[in-house]
Amino acid sequence: MIRNNLAILMSERGIRNSYLSAKTGISKNTISATSSNDGKMIQLETINKICQVLQVEPGQFFSYLPFDLEIKVFCDNLIYDEENVGVDEIGLPVKQPVINELFLDVYVSKVYLNGSKDFSLSGSLVSPVNLYGSVPPIIHIGGSDNDSLEFSKLWASIPKPFQSDIEKVLKSKIFDEIYGILSGKNQDYDFSKWHFDIEFYADTYLNDLEVKFF
Image (cartoon, rainbow, N blue to C red):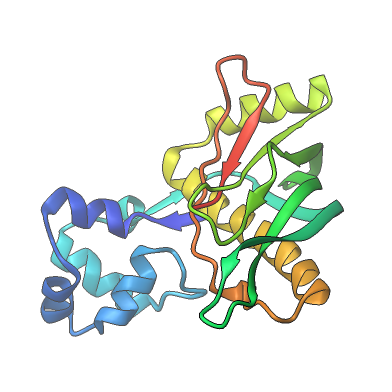
């Protein structure tokens, strides 16, 4: 895995996107995408200009881990319903979507030059949740004792910036899987408008992970 450290370097220097854009001639959108590690490719000239302004070498601009993590998420079971939350102005019932049960299969592969290590994990919804409500759904992710422990140790060894990048991927994978299923069950709701964030961490015993949506 490789990522750039632009956001960290700018934060350390108290530099904003607008200032770096003015100094380098690079658009603010490009700087924002680069600092978020959302860009697929960074041109050498862009790196050159940024390094000159920040007074860093390319080795400081990038961080590297000698492996990749590939994540696949599959829904094993989802029980969906609707609940009445009141009535509208003409007295008709107002319903909102609820997930009563959710079970996920989460497969993570640590891929390196000469092979790979696979982890088989599972996810489950802690309690039923109204998707339009204020209480965020929580999904516990774990696995067999060995897989869960080994993956938790691996996760704890990964630097925080890389963890953030992996969290984005996990969030996207889970969202896409659930969104696809819910959209097929009921087209009256626009599930694409969910706003949520994600926390992904190991507990004290390094054997459970937790995903929170907000």
